[in-house]
Length: 179
Length: 206
Image 1 (cartoon, rainbow over the protein chains, first blue to last red):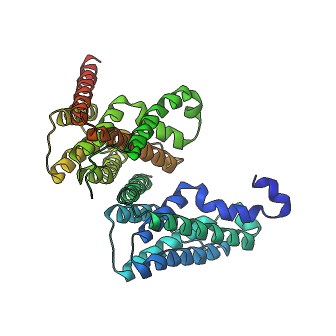
Image 2: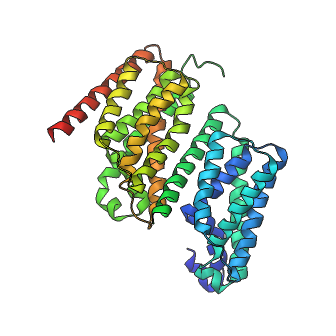
Image 3: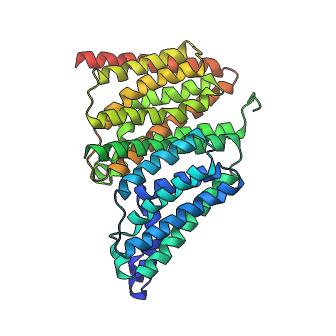
C-alpha cells in the first residue's frame, strides 16, 4: 500500500509516518515513555513527551544531514529498560532528571529513526514531516488512552506492560553486550 | 478496593478471554511449519507456549496470585517478567546454571503444591519463591535466544506470550469468587503438581 503511492511522491511521507510503529526497537521505548508520562502529575505529564519528541526531531534532522549519534541503538535498549522499569515501579521522579532522561532517549530515537533509511535519503523533508507526525500521534494517542484508564485494574495492566517492555530491554541490552 | 464477593459479567468475560488465550496455542501449533519459517516474533511467541513445563509454571504463578488476593495478585505479574529477564540475561551471557531442567520441573511441582496446600506467605516471601524459579525459566529461554538478527522481535514475542499465560492463570483463578471456587483452585493446584511429578519422572526416564 505504501509503495503504491510511490508515484505520487508520498511514499517517503508514509515511510516516516510509519517508522516509529514498524520496528520493535522504536515502538517499545515510545510506548514506555508515553505510559510513564501518563503516570505523572500536570506539568511533567506533557513536558515528558514534548522533550522526547523535540529531541527526537532534532536528532532526526541531524541524521538527515549525515550526523549519526554514537551508540544510539544501545541507548534505545537502555531506554526500554529504564522507562519500562519506571512504569512498573510507578515512580514519580523530580522534573529535571526525568526530562533529561526523556531528552536523551529522544535523541537516540531520532538518530536511529532517520539515519540510513533509504526513504529519508530520497526526500528528507517529506520523511521528517511524516516522522514528526507519526511520533507525535503515537505519543499523544498512547498517553491519552493511559491517562483515561483510571480503573485500578487498568492501572495495574499498564504497570505489567511496563514490566514486559523492561524485560525485553534487559534481554536486548545483554545480547548487545555479548555481541 | 471493594471486595469482589459475587461474580459479575466482567469476571465471566475475563475467564472466557483466558480460555481463548489458552486455546490460541492449539491453533498456532497447527500452523507450526509456517511459523517456524516465519518471523522471529512468532518464533519467540511460540517458544514459551510449546514447552508444557513453562506453560504450567507460568499458569500456576497467575493462579497463585488469584489465591493470594491483594496485593499478590498484581505484584507477582509486575515483578515476574523482570526477574525472568534477568535469568534470561544469565543464559545469554552463557553463565552456566546447573540443573535448569530439574529446576523447571521442580518449580511446577512446588508452585502446584503451594496452591493445593493454600499456603499464604507474605508478599515478599511469595515474590522470593517466584523469583527463584523465574531465574531457571528465564535461563532456559535466554540460552536459546537467537543472535543479533531478529533478537528484539523474538524477545518481545517471548515476553508477551509468557505474560499472557500469566494473565490467563489470574483470570481462571477468578473462579475463586464462586461458591466452591477456593476448592476448585486448590484442586487445580494439585493437578499442576501432579503434572510436575510426571515431568520430573520423564526427566529421569530419559
